[in-house]
Image (cartoon, rainbow, N blue to C red; front, side):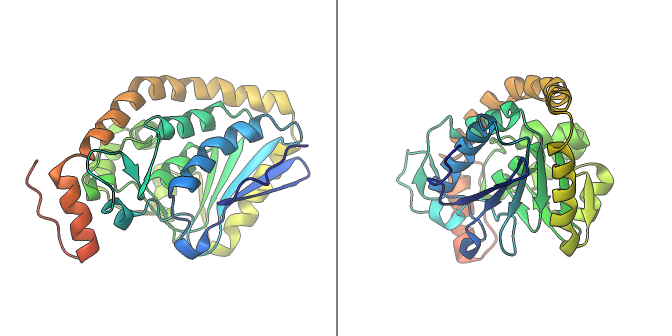
Length: 268
């Protein structure tokens, strides 16, 4: 039996061949800081090896799915180091999260119970079926803090809604609610808040009870196209994101966020 006791930011529950993974730091809005980031990297590989799991349900605890990274924490990082949410990360960490999700053979159903931002939006949209609350807001607002959308947003958004729509959302960092996200195909379903988890759980249990290898190998076949885009785009987008961490525009955006004012960008 697999042991998930080392996970602190994620809660893992198993029943009837279904694993439920809950982002479990509601006091911070499930903000993705260093340990959280590392656990999101590891969980998919651990679940992929678990012979008792035929499907995975991902959701968030509390009001939010996840508010994304800790922008205020970025102000405290020493110059020249690559930090996410105030804690240093391996440069390959974001790549591994995406890769491990795509390599996980079991189908992953995501219940987007509330606002879903940045890296959390990438994780959610990479899942195989998504159910969002009608009022949930989804965005990849990297550009709002002067960063390239390098942790997978440039891979999955264009595949779901087309390149031009994706470029608008990624270059402007704008929010989209669950209803509009479903209408344009960014998510599969938009339902009232109280129906999100039951709907997602029913879908996940159906897949957990279905023909294991037919389901897994269908997912594998479709994911080959996503992996091709991942291999084409991810190294470039992630490297460029690391580069924008060093810009004056990024430092100004973080400072303006902390000071609650409009940033003054200079293109440096």
